[in-house]
Length: 191
Image (cartoon, rainbow, N blue to C red; front, top):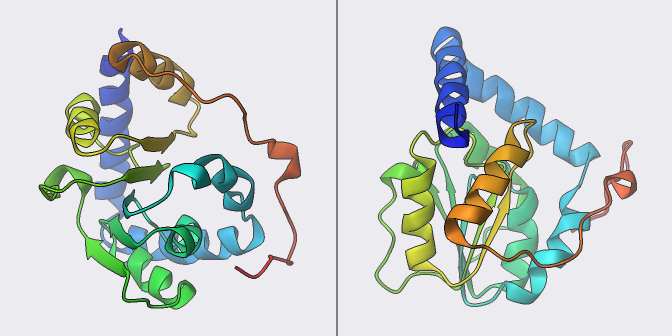
């Protein structure tokens, strides 16, 4: 099985799990995830790797409850925060100050029409794990932006990450976030 076929199998199983639990799953997950990121602000470790590229128009795919959004709005002229879950966006708007340069859209990336002017930076943090046609979506995104940040954090992510790098001839910036430095406990630095 090649990495893309393996990816399709994972997505199929994920979607079956979501269908089994129905519409309540996203609401429960959003509340849990929002609580979890308040205790584990891993973006404070990872975001500095992306910060030099964040300027102008930014698209955040799978914005969730706003962990990276809070950082992006400080550096970008305009942030479009895209998430398919209304529940996630509800928490995002509670967590991130509503600014004129922040736009939220409830939509899957597969259904999102990229504007003709494109973006200066695209960030997808653990947000492409449910996209069946990952190769087509990545081609679409690469055509709309000169610079992208992709975080793929599942166990299967390494094989997919390697396949993506080969297919698109991607060169990685040196440097990795140190997971041992991730904050834990009830204290979260104010953004």
